[in-house]
Amino acid sequence: MDCQRDQWAGTGSGALFLRILAKQFGSCKQKKPLPLPLPIHLKISYMSYIEPAPIKDRENPLESMMKRFDLAAQILGLDESTYNVLKTPTKQVIVGLPITMDDGRVRVFEGYRVIHSNVLGPAKGGIRFDMDVNIDEVKALAAWMTWKCAVVDIPYGGAKGGITCNPREMSAGEMERLMRAYTVALLDIFGPDKDIPAPDMGTGPREMAWLMDEYSKSHGMTVNAVVTGKPLVLGGSLGRVEATGRGIMVSTFAALEKLKINPYQATCAVQGFGNVGSISAKLLAERGLKVVAVSDISGAYYNENGIDIEKALAYRDGNKGTLAGFTEATLIPADDLLTLEVDVLIPAAKEDVITEDVAHTLRCKLIVEGANGPTSAKADAVMAERGIKAVPDILANAGGVTVSYFEWVQNRLGYKWGLDRVQRRSDRIMKDSFERVFQAANKYDVSLRIGAYIVAIDKVAQTYKWRGGF
Ligand code: NAD
Image 1 (cartoon, rainbow, N blue to C red):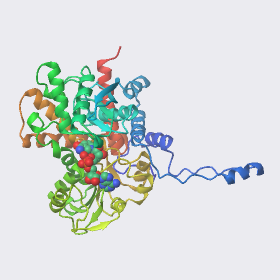
Image 2 (cartoon, helix red, strand yellow):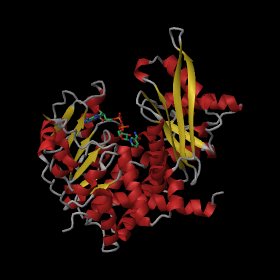
Image 3 (spheres, rainbow, N blue to C red):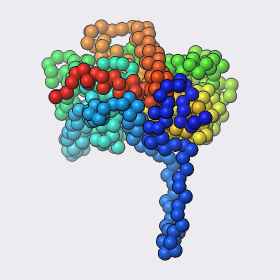
Image 4 (tube, protein in one colour):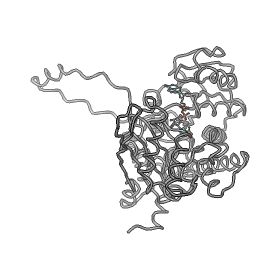
């Protein structure tokens, strides 16, 4: 079998795809030409050169994302002008934020906001507080949001923001002043019809409450639709906390059905036991899957008879948020979880864990990506060769942004939905989106991942063409 061929896909324009893929990633059958013999004077310097220890196949997850974007754009036959429009951020803002620290000194922080696209509607994306935040990262994360919103067909463009800072070293007062200063600096950017922030790494409901309050004061009225991920009492939505894990559960069931795997006999391993991982594990276990392994930063825990997820949750919550010391399962090396023989593997901890090397050792049938960017682009080709399927991040974990969208809708309506309505509507969006992506993957004879990018790019490109440029 050709290593690039995807078994889910029908028999469509496969040849075109193979040519493009081979150009992008190189064919897995391709052999490097043997080096010519070196002249003697060169042999000495060649031999004395010591190659640095190989770094594992670490690929920047954002570069990986752009490789998939490029591939999908080529398959779609996107014209060069539209390709350039879709790749280029609409707006990039960098602000200096002078903050009086608790010791009386003034420190200046750098803050960023990038709107990648507002073609589909107001831009949507989180605010990250982290020392590694920089304009390039924010640009790439903003593009990621554009594709994610488009794939689940919600009327948002993509954005991201951040401040280079270390929230762990800051007091609550310093954090509050920083968040309020950032909001004031970006008053012209934010707005319920323009750009709607949300929490990301290092920020949460508390920071969103400060943002909402500062924005509202500046406008002389309460504007809760300017931000999502707020505390419930300020207009947050019921179901938001569980939304991403619930979307993973819906995606897993949809994919198992296509693969004709009986969920009641299926086994599952989940990497990460935070918001996404623990809720995915809980919802899947409640619906009959046997979750044989879970992990967090303290290690991986395996029980071939299935882990009692309720017990694991109760243990974690009473143990400072960690599974360390959990005795209802056997402690195994953390990375071993990824290569267990299970039907479903859910990486829900961090990016770039399924590298090319790991992909060769996987023993699962299906990967459902809870984290953003857990699989490298190089691993895609190996997984295709080995017949391992993946529901990609921009589809699988989009339940979170979907319920954020519901929060915004409720704020604008001035009406609160019950949990049942939130869940029914988000489940339907996740199921419909899975089906759309599945159909696109079949039509173009590609993986679900490339199918998802095709759906997203096609939607943004078509909308852009109708709206027109200058
Ligand atoms: P979290 O901080 O609540 O949980 C992360 C979990 O991963 C923790 O249990 C941590 O101990 C564990 N972990 C960290 N490093 C690990 C390692 N090397 N091995 C095993 N476990 C490890 O974060 P979260 O909100 O659950 O987010 C997880 C991922 O999902 C991130 O990539 C995030 O960007 C993505 N995501 C989250 C949401 C959301 O709504 N929370 C939405 C979309 C995507």
